[in-house]
Length: 371
Image (cartoon, rainbow, N blue to C red; front, top):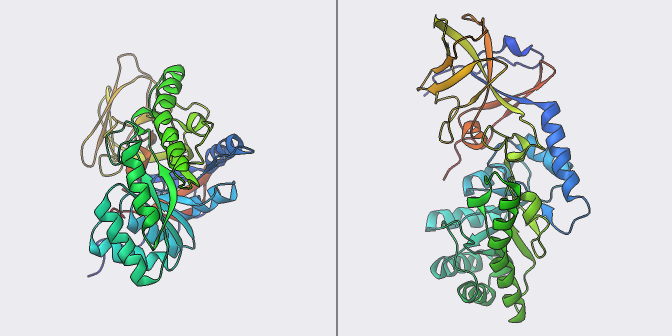
């Protein structure tokens, strides 16, 4: 069956205001500054950056991250890793558990093409991975995931993690690469001092677990974790070897007050389609163009915005009394999404813009890769 829409014409070289909307934009100057800022932090440190590509799902941005000094990439899902391996990436951490015969078979096929490391927190899963790797003649690197407070995946620190690590080390076709622990419940803590104290308290049992494994003769080459909100704390914490930060490349409206050293580079370009009264603008970008789980997007460059409400296809911008906005139908508006990762997943392409001109159009190659 033919797609319900034709391929759009090549937008390279167009002025931004010539784009049809809604359109996903990335400001190249801001993106490059964000890459340089993060690279500058890790320069000369024991820990390195293994960026999480679930944020952008775009091989071109990942190549730029590696060129800026990152080592390998992190993926959220197996399908995401398959897309990036097909694009030439050969050092991939899947920061998740790969469970079930179908997915394990796909993982083995992927491991023939790239070095892939996966997370585990369950004995039966370890056995299944080992049996499959042995059949395929592979040796699969594994990180034991430790729950350090997020309450999602992961085994408890200490003895429970040690027991799983021993099982991995004893499995004939698995390689115990180390540990993984994610302090994701703390990445948006606003106060820097509070954030630092709470992150260090969460990391302490992870590093104590590392010491326990090493005392028991189990090598721990990798301790992986961290996010954009905590990269400078976790990345400087003794014993942590790599950070999985991803959102720093875009910095959405939620991260903006937490990480002011980075700047917004991702925008939704929308068109005003209605001005029903002086206190209201309606744009053509709703929940199918930008997600709202962290709240509405921020409107750029319009004074007196009181609220933004999203429905499926519309964004309703309410203006406060005394505003000076003069926009009419046909005018353009830029929005900063409240969550960059899920917003990117709604779009097929990123328009890479420099000083108002589309310099390139990049496919969001791993869009929808959630299986």
